[in-house]
Image (cartoon, rainbow, N blue to C red; front, side):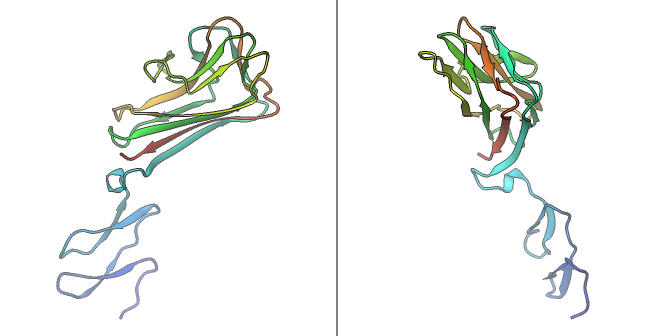
Amino acid sequence: MASGTDGNIISYDASGNPVAIATGSDGQVLTSAGAGSPPAFAGMTSAGMPTGSIVSYKFVTVSPGAGGTSTSSTSYVEGNSGLRITHAMAASGNKLIFSFYTIDTYITSSTTTHIAVTNLTDVTTNIMSPDRPLIYIKSHNGLEPHSVFGHQEYSPGSTSSITYCLSMKTGGSGTAYMNNTPAAGQMRFTLMEIKQ
């Protein structure tokens, strides 16, 4: 057999003669071109993935020392502009899973803190209807949670690009805090698109 190029794959043409399949680009996968044609490298699409595969994974982190957030509003307000993720779905039928982690999150009175995923075009409205927060904290006998984590599933039903952010509100009186000790910890907001 003759010398070839590094990375090429040997296959056979319709006449049974050996042919070299040119090396693809980084991230491409070998795909079938059907009977009588040699395979070729192509980009992986979500259509070729099995159900439950992670199509896309994105995250943003607000580092320690970057500042905390507080509000006394009973309507959602954006928590931190560093916690935004812009994403366009690969397929409208896929689902998103959001997760969020923070420390020192609490409410100063006997009421509740709500942290929700919102669309940046309307930070006052939870994308989950009816209003189901990503994180819900209830003050009880002066005890305050320290580290909190929440996750939520959502189906946008569209492939339009959307910027998601985290918004917070109180369930009544008092002030809600998120990452109130910024020197000690970080906040992390994650988005995963799942093939359906």
